[in-house]
Image (cartoon, rainbow, N blue to C red; front, side, top):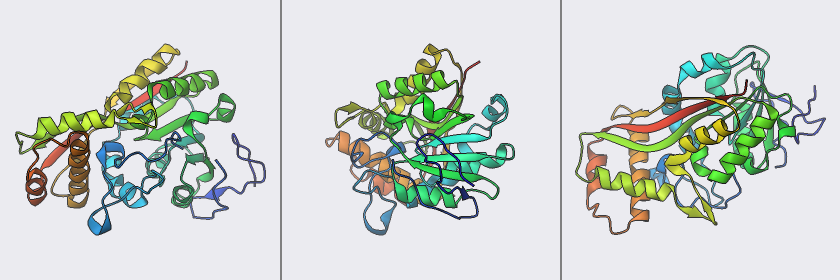
Length: 309
């Protein structure tokens, strides 16, 4: 069985969720080089056994993506799925990582699904394809999001991504909106970080660290100004301008001492990014105190659904 999707060539073997894999195809995320030392939600590269890492190429490690998957699944706005138009069979997942969005979303859609997993990292594409549920066919494409064209969306029923928009620029989001508008394909963008953090118990330094972290997420990387916590609103604005009906829902992470590995790793990344942005920040033993008595945390995200009538 063969299919053609976008730049995927005829003859490319499909993959099933049972793990048969013909290998990722040549060609997600914009081609930026390393994302400094932090990724979405401020995860900072942590050496050794202390946490998940981001590789030298700027890709997110499978360890970190696996660590955050349960929190991602619990946070996504399920009610947006009720607003999806028509039958969804072919889904293109941008910046798919290990495929956690596909594993969450595909059981909530109808039968006969085909997913086109798109990412810059071929190793993650292999994991994403092999981890999809039974009955879902998968093809993979190594492609820069900024290179996506309307022709590649022919036959696509839904474009998705998770925790990706904050790594794009205003121009890249506007271009993506234009591509989806021309192809008349609805989009579901989940878990765009908003920068709002609430911790309990509170600490006098929380506000300063939050502000420094958000400034770091808006940093310039290789001449590109990342959207960071402004990404969700940028997507709303861009898709509204090209005629989409846009619906937004909050999708905050809920962290706590009950999930110590993720809460601790998020804290390390959040504080680390803040200090990188502001080396003068008087954090002192803040991180040690927080790690010794893990707080409850609400980490702001938003989900965005855009539909073309």
